Image (cartoon, rainbow, N blue to C red; front, side, top):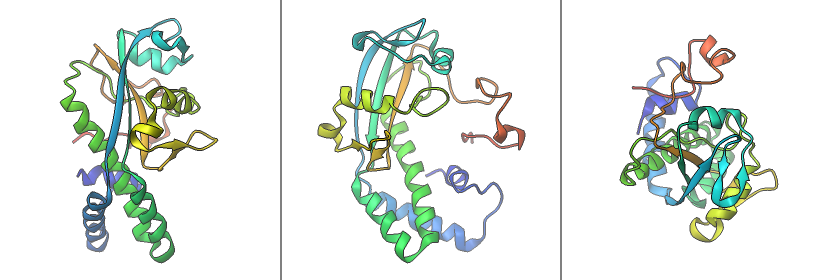
Amino acid sequence: MNKKAILQYLNCFGQVDEKTNQLIDECIVEVQQYAHFKVVHQNFSLTHGPIGIQELDLSFCSNDLEFYMKECQTCLVIACTLGIQIDRQIKYYEHIDMARAIVFDAVSSRYLEECCDEYEKILNLGEHTFRFAPGYGDLPLVLNKTLSRVLNVHKKIGVTLSQSGLFIPMKSMLGIIGIGKSQQKSCMSCVRKESCELRKGGQRCYVKD
């Protein structure tokens, strides 16, 4: 796993002590042991002006999504989870060892991203954008509910949603990938580069080795 990315989840941007480094290594082993990665996806046609999904007669009203996918005619909606046991371990550690709970949570988040990245590779998508998730930029979080119903995530991967649109298990995510245009995360391609507080502080919201 990418430990540099894990440290970003922990808001650690410099060197960490040996004890913390060892704790991260231990949590990596545990997360891989308890995680049960499941995934579901479906392809759709995109419309533009405003951007939306043709088959669902659904408009996103998102300038950010239009910016990143303006040259894409199709998209892939993907949802995945690490399963409920990860949540149970986090709650368990919150009662006995808060430091381990925080690190375990960060490692779990990164592991979910890496599992989804690896799964995308076997799909042979060709030129494609990064995953754009509801709640990111100006794309409303409530879209999680609509797209989760379409993918039938409850039946297929065991994921439900809270009233506010958050996933249960919490180490689950849903994203939209534009097909036909290569667009990776970078500060210069971001629509929020001028107002980003992370960038002003010399940091960024993604990891590039």
